[in-house]
Image (cartoon, rainbow over all chains, first blue to last red; front, side, top):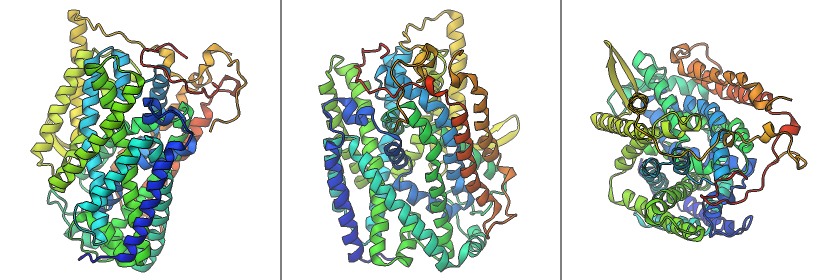
Length: 526
Length: 88
């Protein structure tokens, strides 16, 4: 589809964009505090209640790029694209069980990043900076991908060139610098309202126009075999082969394990005011999963509507262009663009926190004051954004997409140190580093071997070939290496001198073992 | 009373394994029929599990909640420094 300039859409888009910009700056006055402390700038003071946390985590996890990429994958590959649904369902039992432990220990010891926890648990700056570096590597392309999302909607409205993108990001950088995590928290409220409205309207209105669900699925069933995925396989409505099914399941499982290891998800979690807020949120966050399922269906609607996008990323924008009046196009595209700003802001804050706490403070200036920390983080958040911007402007889009896929594989390799570390201090710190190196190497090799066209790699074990998410293969090797070396190190008596500064009760937020609290328990927090 | 409430009923967490089994065993739902409002089984089954998982999580949350008098008061955050590793 050729994209003409849509003036009405652009006007509405700019109005909404301007509104969230004002909101971003005003956010610094919200629950006012001294923003020269990293806890305030980088974690919003750890005071967010149930509702703000819900919007923040939802805005953080379900990014603009998801809204573009998931329907695009469904449009091309069919059922495989729906792995996003089981992924974001089983995610929540995992969050329910694991994240309150991380919140509690982080609260007790003042940890700001996942690497801070690793440092405290294993007493190892090396292991902590390894985790931090992995987080930075995985986050950068993720930020770049948000820019790709903005670029797509601007392109759909007929806005060409890099300048609009640069302006949008400069504005984002300015209010993130100014307000810290408060800015995306407040903007997330607007973003999600717009997204919910857009998707509900799209589902109700476009389904009716196209001719109902029965017709949509029939069209998809008929035409999917003619579509092809990046690897050249035909699409399918139902995953029929054994290979397709294991790919589907392992992608869902591996992605669910990886998501909350990302620094920006940890940042969102730690900004909650209690572990109970985290737990309650894992119960209500699946509302976004339902929404994501509806968004995935847009891929099939595009098939039924006969959309022929020039690039798969334009599947949803082209569908909206075909059915929506211009002013509502503006609303829908603004929803996607603002949906890119929220996670991009949180990601850059998380990356800045990581750099400040686990690289700057660890190696460059161990005696940095709270004020210096906050200043370094603020400046770093600007660098991170400029980096992401250059990435998108100078390199082909595929580059960010490929690196983001690899980022998921990489971040999964921090699971033994972080998640298993929340339960046991059994693993030897050098074994963890060796396991991480093995996992990173295997995962990266697999991605290169597949020429970045897919994240599903075949491995033959004892004559059976299994197709599974390469991140999981890498994690399996990582765990084996870590476990074997831990045992070897213990047997040969290699000492693990790292001091564990945490105690078992730090992981439980309920001070119940000590008896009822002295203060009168207040009603319901939140 | 002995120990904390959450610890006593920890076995209830096993309920949270159910969505894993239901969704990761793909052959169980990789089929077209029965359809619901024209939506193939593969798809409406996944949507249904969003709701079932929410119900399971809510049930486990309520059932493992410690009795009211044992709940910690929501602590006001006191910004500790990294060195301030002492429990609040």
